[in-house]
Image 1 (spheres, rainbow, N blue to C red):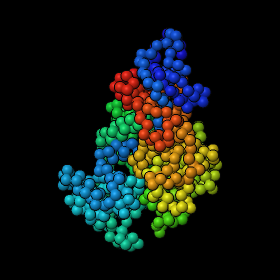
Image 2 (image 1 turned 30 degrees about the vertical axis):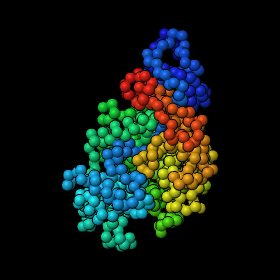
Image 3 (image 1 turned 60 degrees about the horizontal axis):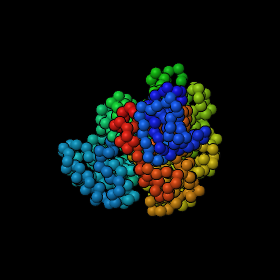
Image 4 (image 1 turned 135 degrees about the vertical axis):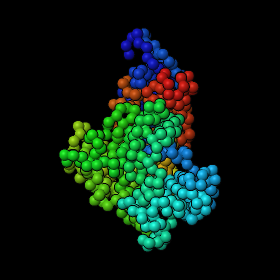
Length: 561
């Protein structure tokens, strides 16, 4: 640091874990204009350098800001205002919750809930029971996997299902009784892309409403130590909230409500043919990377299948507890062509593939795309989202293609017992591998998929990487466990790398973003059972407190230090 300099912030009296190999430990971090200018061996600035603000960490551990490489911000923010169905253990409790919320609403208002688990409940909610509970209102309940929903008769009627006018989207299923009769009575359960029949009755959501949801979500993120997230699917398909979803993020940023840095993945159906034979893309030739460190366009997202918890992931062999092997997201040729054409248009692609058959199909498409000319300058960092069931043969292909797996370790705790029952004991140790990916030379960026399935708290995700324990206490794939340092790097260094930000953030080193988390305990020294309960004392993004300002003696959250 130059002499006669006034920096913005000094965080002192800290046990700094930089995750930077050149200078792994320190006692203080100096931040100026949003960037780290120095990590110091003691609490004293060099002669002639002073700090406008000084924060004392009180000896606490300081690490780089956490990064969730795959979650759903707007959706999570909306879910905070919906009926919470997670944890309910019988259908009567679901119907009671629906009735209680319906009593608060006008007669024609939608009743929306999220997080039900058909395995725990003994089945999905029945539409006629939802009719009674909702008093005839339209009722839409979302499964914890987000790949299934249950709706009332009024929703089916408005969507055109009952009069036969509804066109079932490719890759979707309207569940009927009997199941093998196309003219059977709809049960109210919609699988995969068929969920759009319900969702489209409310979409597109207003930009202001979405900005409010984003503000609610990112405030939670900041309290958990997150400083960057990737929004895994906007603007199209059953997952998109609005064609103007990016505008909602812009509005949240302009209002000062975007508490984290965000990369946005457009859902692949919003890409279209580009003139001149340039593959598929967005207007004006937009590609990943457009934006800045705060808000940026990321990869294109494509769904190759569903989820294990809903038994809709595409498997090579039937599920151990079902008479089917799940579903691909569309015809294999259509998925293949969509991915290849997106890559030809200059897009990095994030392929959602959980079941082994879907993983095979996605890798086939990535291999074909690799044979096409790449229009970008830097090689793409393609991603396999979830990579739920990957055997050794698929792992070798994954490594050879250089496609990065993005698993969600916390699934092992939240739904590990259900997933193991789905695939059977002979395949259970293939679930959400981690150490094997590393041994193959791949990076493993961390993510949660929140609000799908699991608690999104980064520290709980790290605990599951280390323990691989289910809620019932079973260990799944003990050889896939990693140490705490590796888990921490997954949520920092590796997550920054997959976004192309390894020279921007993810470590605490001069020139990198002043994104840091103050923890109540040293994550590398506590018992692994305590990792998920460590207090996040404060979170700073670019040297600004987004959480816990008072604990450090800094200005109110979000203000400049």
